[in-house]
Image: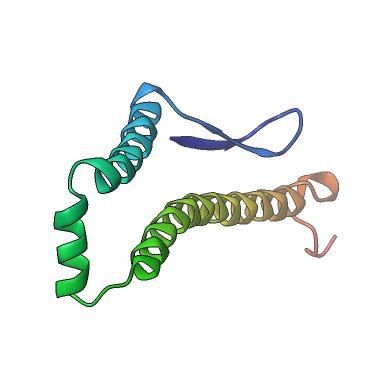
Length: 112
């Protein structure tokens, strides 16, 4: 996934290909299969595992929710990191252009 700034709107946008789409399809499909399987295929085995390890159904649900939130959080952190890097690069570029664009070609702040 590539994150860049749109030149017209100045907003960050993400561009992802087929690999990224396939990754999300697999993740969502695995979640759906787990939910279906927990109700139809391995209900007794899952119940036994939860009882053996003293995990409540609410605890399992909370864990699955935290996994989903973690995936979204990782994407937000990636955007924030790109934004921070992009802002720093723009600030450095603006500072460089101010130093170069002084009167008569001399850097600003230098004696005339």
